[in-house]
Length: 464
Image (cartoon, rainbow, N blue to C red; front, top):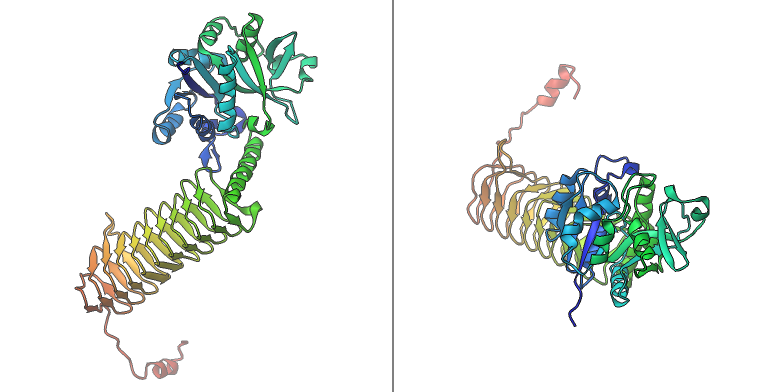
C-alpha cells in the first residue's frame, strides 16, 4: 500500500499587533531563537512529513531572510494582504494541492511537540478523516475560539462571534489542523467573510465539512500548555519559562548537573553531554556543544561554542562562535570571540580578550592581554599586558607566534609580524620586525637614571 503524502503550512504573515513590536511577531526571540523556529522544529521532527511552507506577509523580508539561512528547505509563500487564516490557506492551496493531506498551524505556538503532531497526523490518516484538529482545556478560556460539539456536528466559534452561552464552553481550539487536501480545497471555495472581523476563517472549514457529513474529528491535547500561543509580551514570558523548564529537565535526565535550576538558561539547539556541571547563572545559547566532564562557571555566557571534554570555563566568561579544546581553561573574566580556537590544555586567564585567533596546545595567556588576528603555537607563554596591534587604521593584520616562545610582559606586537619558534621578547618591548627562531628581541628605549633629580625638585618646592 502506498503511503499518503503529507505537507505542512505554517501561518506567519500577521503583524502581531499586541506585541507592540517593529518586528514580525514570529521573528521575536524566545530563548534567543525566533518564535517561528519552534513550530518548524516540531514539524521537522515528524518523519513522514514531506515538505513545509511558511506563509509570509507583514515585513516578509525579515522572515524570508531567516528561512534562507536557517531553513533553506522551507518554501515561503507570500500573502500580500492579510484577510484571515482561510485566505492564507486559499493562497497556499496551489502549493499543497500535490499532497494527499496537509497540516496547517500557526507560527506562534512554540510549545507544541513533534510527537503530538505525529500522533495527530497518524490518527487523521488512519481514521480516513476529512479534517482533524487539536483542542485543549485551558485554565482561562477567554480569547480562544470555542469548540462546539452538538448532535454529532462540530464547529469552532471565534470569541468575537460567540454567544454568551458559547463563551462558557471550556474546550478551546488550538489552531492546529490536518485536512484531506481534496476536501479542504473544495471547502475553501465556499467559505465567506461574514463575521465580526470581515475575514475568511479557516475554522469555518471545520463547520462546513461537518455540516456536509464529512468526517471531522477533535483530538484533545493531554498537555494544554502545548497549545499556548504568543500574542503579547506577557505570554512571551510565560512561554519562555515553560520552554526553559522543559529544556533543562531533558538535560538533567541525560546526566547534566546544575547547581541552581532557577537561574540556568539553555537554548533549544544546545547539546550537553553527561557529567557536565553548570554553576548558577549560566547561559548557553545557539548551537553550543558542551562535552562530557566539563564545567561552566557562574555568570558565563556561551553562544555557538564547542567545549571539549574536561574543559573548565570559569566565572564571568563570554565565549562566542569559538571552540575550547579538551582540558583547556578559560577565565575568569575572559572574552573569546569570532572563530577563535583555544586548543587542548591551553589557558586563557583573567581579563584577557581573544579575537579571531588560535591559542595552541598547552599555551598560556594568563592575564590582561589582547590577542587578535593571531596564531599562537604550542607551549608558548604570553606575558601580562601583551597586545597584538592588529589594526593599522585600514585593515587587520596577522601576528604569528611560534612554538615554545616566551613573550615578555607588556610587549606590543605590531602586525604583520612573526615570532619564530623558541624566540623571546623582552618585557616592555615594541616589536615591529620579525623575530627569527631562538632569538631574543628587545625593542625599548634605553633606560636613563638622572642623579639628584629628586633633591633638586624639592629645593624648587615642587610636589612629587
